[in-house]
View 1 (tube, helix red, strand yellow):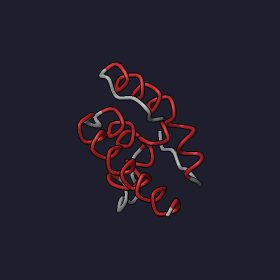
View 2: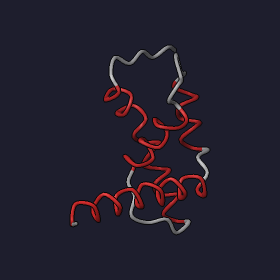
View 3: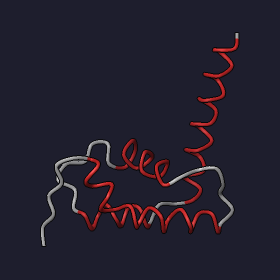
View 4: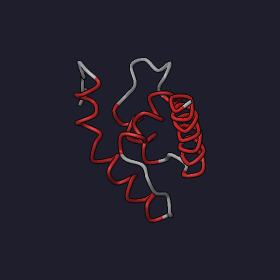
Length: 91
């Protein structure tokens, strides 16, 4: 069965259950202060950035196989960027 998505929102809706499962997995491992949208953003920015004609099964597989340490590093980086941005606005 082939799926064709016409927007990122359609794809998001289709893979959202897998993202929710991954959030629960990471929270069980002690990761906090992140959402399913953070996982989505990470994968779009890193894993799928140059991807074309990705299969739905590959996308779900990428979600389920996402490494917690790799994701934690990403969260730390975006938190540092946010902190830097806030510091610059205060000055």
